[in-house]
Picture 1 (cartoon, rainbow, N blue to C red):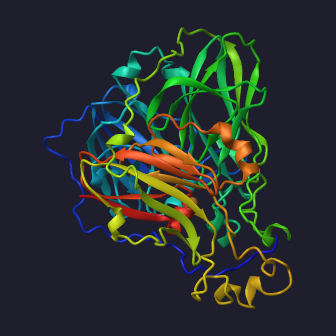
Picture 2: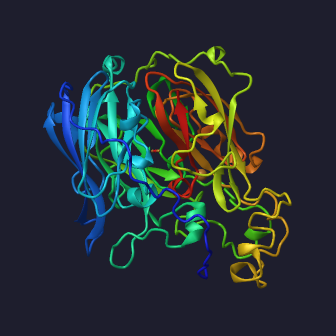
Picture 3: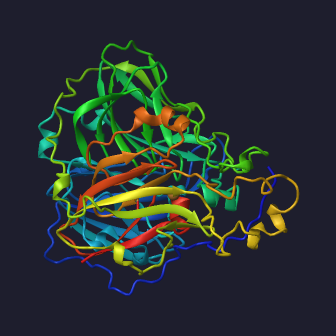
Length: 544
Ligand code: C2O
Ligand code: CU
């Protein structure tokens, strides 16, 4: 399609300001069980055949601890897999050797404010930031990535897994080590010189979120897991994509066996026909190759779902608003990865019928069960907003202030439409600004001269992430979801367990319950479509 130039009022909302607080230093009394160095640095890596690709990587080095604590994914731009146990004390010395500011966020971890980090904690090139915390989380699959200019930095390669185990998990005979496999799913676009292309569709990508042209698994374009017949595997899936949503299904029609989500194991394994995996979500999938002959290939594909992000007239005419341009449109069918039974072996791991003892929050203990705080994620006035507000570095609204020690229900609402549909004279659709008769919106290409777009025009999924906590999902309201879409995805949600991110499809809302404990401070919650986050769909909340 023709290149479209729009002037965004909101180009780079997360531009950081220097932190005013002192950077954490080495704690003299802190006795780490695991001490490691994590360096963010630019490298040239062989990813495709031909020229090397410039990427940004986290390189880990273990200074203290058992050597299993740090597993490097050879040849991948992805960071090391860090393996810790609940109760351990961990020190991470983050060194920023990138040409720009950055900071590491431990996604899903329950840690104090300065280790959770805030976008204003970014450090300059050449600086170091020390994390020292005790692992308080349940066994689960957590991850780490930058915060600040999150979209481009993650896209350039900065991300890694942090796996937590605990007593309860260790008593189960789940697959470990070479049978416990990371499967990080990301999409990327490369140019003719094998360099990563970001926001190739300009501002449109920024609005919809970036979609790449091909899938990489653990940073590899081969999309293949080399496994052994006779063995059972724990596949730790992470959707590490900037904005892509997956509907994962085994191509041969076998059910997908799920036994863990984000920050916990499930109480019992669940068999699903397919699995919806929004950005930032993790899921544990069981794969049993016991009776599979050598050479068996099992492909996990993306199954189709009808996601029309634009309602109204725009979609009809040329489809330019279907989202980021990609050879793999959101919701289309394509292979994600193939598990290959290559060679044979055996292991005696089993998937127990009873996994974690459920310790979910009793909803009746929430002070605001009948009047939850409501947060609406929507497009308004050309900006991605939460309750009509956009990102401000230190601003905290009343409804964003919670009490330490409280249990609360938050209702997270995908408010959809781009327009507020009122006549207050603001907004993009009323003949001012981009909708005037200049630029892309004038003319007769049909894009803006149809009716319909004034209403609920832009329908985007929003994967909502709350820092610092793990929550339970107590209700998902789908009454306003397009029935055709809902019909195609409804069997793919795993709402049991402890989560830190919830995928809200257009029209959907969810009630989540959580406890604010141990740490006061300023934290963020945001859309984990990284382009939305970078465009301002992020806010502070304060625990007081
Ligand atoms: Cu993975 Cu603030 O996010
Ligand atoms: Cu979003």
